[in-house]
Image (cartoon, rainbow over all chains, first blue to last red; front, side, top):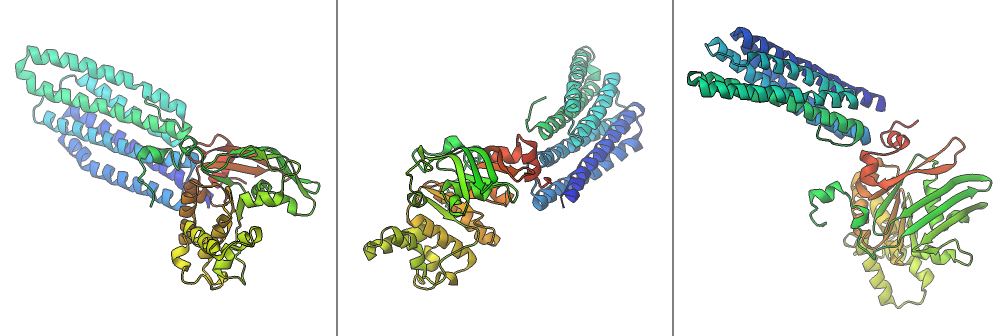
Amino acid sequence: MRERFSQDLEQIGTELEALAAFVAEQIATASSALRSGDVEAAETVISNDKYVNDRDIEISNGCAVLIARDQPVASDLRHIIACLKAVSDIEGIGDDAVHAAKRAKDVAGGMRLLESDRIARMMELGAGMLRDSVRALAARDEALARSTASLDGEMDELKRQSYQDLLEIMAGTPEALKDATKSLLLTRFLERMGDHAVTICSWAVYSASAEYVEL
Amino acid sequence: MNPIRSLADIVRSPSAPEAAPAGTGRSIAIKSLSAYYGKHRALEDIDLDVLPGLITAIIGPSGCGKSTLIRCVNRMHEVIKGAYATGSVLLDGEDIYAPGASPVRIRRRIGMVFQKPNPFPTRTVYENVIAGLRLNFPRMPKADYDETVERSLRAAALWDEVKDKLHSSGSALSGGQQQRLCIARAIAIEPEVLLLDEPCSALDPTATLKIEELLYTLKAKYTIVLVTHNMQQAARASDMTAFMLADESHVGRLIEYGQTRDIFIEPKESRTEEYISGRLG
């Protein structure tokens, strides 16, 4: 009886990790599409988002079934709640990847992506934070959660520097205003991936220690 | 029926010790209590402060000494041949094991309800309710008995269901009604404490919920101790939870005691966690 429950609980973690891996792949695809202006790749990322949304609902339902069926308590209960909360953040990061894919379509249509190196780094960082935060949650690994959350400092710094440089471009080159604004908005969406990942890390700590901390 | 509770109330739920209104119920301070059946020690060194005006659940696997513990609280344990207890149990500061303390008087102050509804089968509903009262005060005017019967049955949330069959046999009632009849019988003598030993284990979910709601209304007036095997019941119905466990030589000990919300969300002891999540043994 409890053996089945333990397996099911583990399965939720496994599915979260699989979903995180899928979304990380979405980010990577969007990132290379931004560089190459590959419309087809960008479209794939956009259409794949339905799968991410569906998995969010399915995993949430799975958590609801475990709560109703097995009436978990203590660390099991905390873990299910943490997974239930985290899956929304994974889905949110998926939306950020879609935003990047839409900009990739703009690039294909002639938009000049500014701050492309920092943007590429932010996407790489976001994908890594996503994978590690969900891995920390599934393994109830508080140390990994805390170290992953600490990477958000680099993300914020990249955003800050991009913002500054883009403002200067906007001020000095009015004809670049449209491209710079779109690039700026993109960095805002990418920075949010880090925030989502940090929230997942906080839920991982909650699962492991019963304490919810803003990381 | 109950006032609307804010989210803060719910999170503190069911009600934190500090939320207990002063002056309701009686405290029970169990100090260094050990209980024996002849040479076998069933309980060792229990220290437990049962707080007034709250429902305290006692949970633990079969044979951990839960029932023995509450039977010590109203001196029912010693009724078994060879059984005795050491240590003290203070009811509102008064040691019920003090030399000269009268077990009969103590049992009048501490009502008990058992696992299987046990109304006196040959007596009517009415006679069941006043059975204890007749024993203690045989010469009360009938009007006083009538008043006690109605008051107790109302308090036990049974009046509306039985007011037209007060003079039918108590055993004709449903299981859940019989158990509420036993609660009415226990509170008819106006005890200060109500001990319930798995009162719902023979009842269906609807009857169980009725008993739990009843306990919720009664806790304003009585200190309630609820022994239960049902984890969800402890989580739903109690304010405080005590977890007991017996070792290999069947000696029962108190492992953890705290607010129910803490026990069920972040227990401190790994053995508590293993038990409440069904992983012990």
